[in-house]
Length: 142
Image (cartoon, rainbow, N blue to C red; front, side):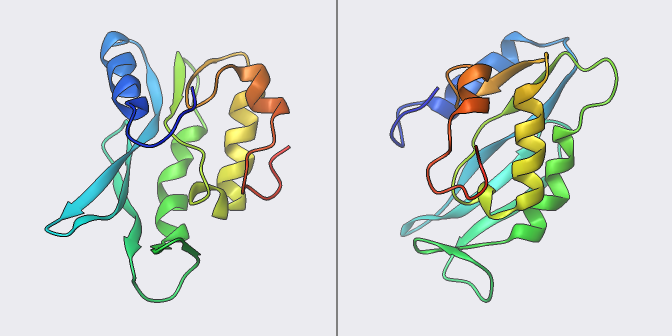
């Protein structure tokens, strides 16, 4: 599924995960980090409970997407959930955006998942679209 920010894409991902309670799921979703002045960054949350700060307003070194500095190493520490073991019923990928696509390893893993026969849930309309569509701003996604 695709759409502009704030229309409920991640909320829908949460609801799908709730409905699949009892199924063996792996994957992740993203959350906004908010402070007094509004959004301060993003956190990536793996379905196994691991979390990492994906991006922060300002920040030190590292690649930038808009006003956010992206922690690619933190993303890569969590993205291994995209490599499901045997018996996984579904892989949940909440977002494949510019921040996530700064990691070539993440892009490879997400592309692999989109080509498999597992059911995939996330911000794609279909697995076929995911594997054929080039993500805007995502180098190497074809």
